[in-house]
Image (cartoon, rainbow, N blue to C red):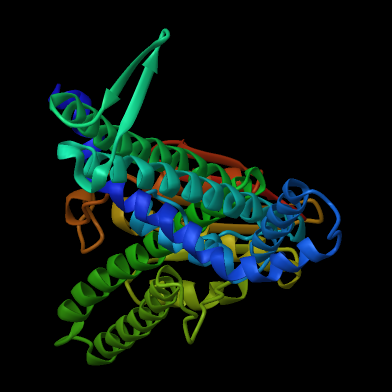
Amino acid sequence: MLKGLRPLLRGSTYSGMLFAYCGALASLPLLPFALPVMLVQPSAPYGVRAALVLLAWAALTGAVGLVPVTRRALIASARHLLRVPLPDPTTARRTAGARGTDRRRTSLWLLLHVALGWVGSLVTGVLVLLGLTLPGNWLGAEADLSLSGRTVRLDGGWQSWVVALGCLLLAAAVCAVVTGALRWLAPRLLGPSPAEQLALAAEREQSLAERNRLAHELHDSIGHTLTATTIQAAVAGEMFGADPAAARAALRSIEESSRAALEDLDHVLGVLRDQRAETAPTRTLADLPELLDRLRHTGAVLEPELSGDLAQVRGTLSRAAYRILQEALTNALRHGAGGPIGVRVAATPDALELSVVNRTGTAAGPRTGTGAFPTSGHGLPGLAERVRLLHGEFESGPHGPRHWRLAVRLPVGVSA
């Protein structure tokens, strides 16, 4: 029995009924503006004039739903009193058609809200009044119950107490029904429309794609910087006594690499906090010579082979190519075994071709051994994903005896 009464005892049921009462009371100030309709046809029957007043009252109530602030107020109150998880409508990017749909749905919600509020308040009011006055024949209350031609007069006694208890339980049930109806209607009329749901899904997809791109950027930038600075610090330590000038150059390179990484980190954190970073890094193939110079300060031997007009490669393609080469060179420093690192960049009218070739195996020196540089294993999969988004071709694996090659071909004129 307690399980059956549980819906009637929930606090949200009565807070929802309070929400319904508020809707009914909020419509009262509009009633005086509808009463003059009775004077339009004074000779019409009273029932007709009363129906016209109700129609005018409903039209004024629905017109309130056309005000944009009304929807936000209703959503806020429904969240607190109905306990319905409704999204904030301002977070969705909507078209003019979606706004018109929202206003019509808000007007319909107001009409149903007010109607349920008045029906619920009147019915529960009568039932509660009966439940309080029937026992003991208070206030001289009497009632007749008729069933199958048999009439029972309630003028006191245990029958009045039973009927009074039934009225109170029925009033609680009406509260539960009204609240349940409002809770069922709220997501459908105050929640996102199909157009808004599509817009929200597209916005979430774009946000996830942007965060994924930022994760790639941060991985490439910070991972490269930490690898390069670790090697440069080792070089500076070894050369400090024998060649102070080379040691100072390595320290300057550490400073430049760290500053560039901090700029990238500041930009990424600014985007993640929905703020505009002061300096947005836009590293492109034009910055490739600077990247190669920083790597040379680590003691790496680079053999660049640049062909074509790299200045004509712009936008997303140029930025992606820089990050791909940065990650490939970082991997070569981490896992290479010394020896020259071949860097090839070829720009043609149809495609941009990138490749990095390095030796593999065991060698002495600060750049050897994968154990010195533990990695997350996300580097190559991240590069493959970046290339896939650019509709390019990705290849990575052994290349001849004791060499590793990473090759990428990006079509010109395609952006992610």
